[in-house]
Length: 328
Image (cartoon, rainbow, N blue to C red; front, side, top):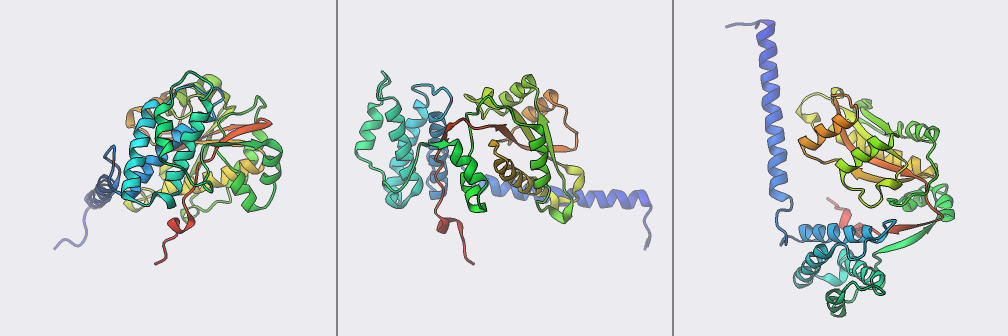
């Protein structure tokens, strides 16, 4: 029996075991995602159906607050949304659903902004005549006053959290880099696994690069030119070890980023989060546009700017708290 293996062989076997564990863990993740994620256009599962409804009405909701709303937008999405709402009403209790009713409110707002145009919304009105939303549930958009934003952002923590919204129409006033540094300093108090502090923030100021990055991201169409500065949130893979850490960078950087967003809000800066859950090809293209460390994984972007005196904000209805809390 060999008691001691040669160092090279021992290292090879260790790496082989680590590779096996990584493969098992990533396969486990893939199989679970494949099993439970949405695959159908019209799902049967309640959570999947509701998520599709939210996703569709939120796209319409965002269209209502664009700097220049494109009249007649989203026709195919509206047709799909109406079909999903009909399915939901047939299968589940639509009266108690926040998102069913919020979707109806969004459709009402859509009809309202087209009421004095030649855009035909008859098919939406026909649907709404048979489906009235509960007045207690909001949807669509509202006007946020800059004075109120400033007051609440400097108030208590509840005020700060509730006044934070995704802003998609910024003023021409530039964001001071000193304030960005201050917000990052505040965000450094965020927790991270074993205090590894893997989060890294890239600041993009160059308008040409920003335009190319946002085009790849594709979630800021209609307001990309209004974003003054862009933050790219990432984490350093070198901070982690083993398959058990495969998702830890996303956890740590997201905790950091949420604190950063609250800090920016506290300093009077508007933000909009833009996700980066993209293909390998798009990730490689991004790395050609901006210089990113090879070991850094991009998580998402934060668009920055100052609010106008009055800014349209999407309602973005939230789940009921009892639907979030699961008591074991």
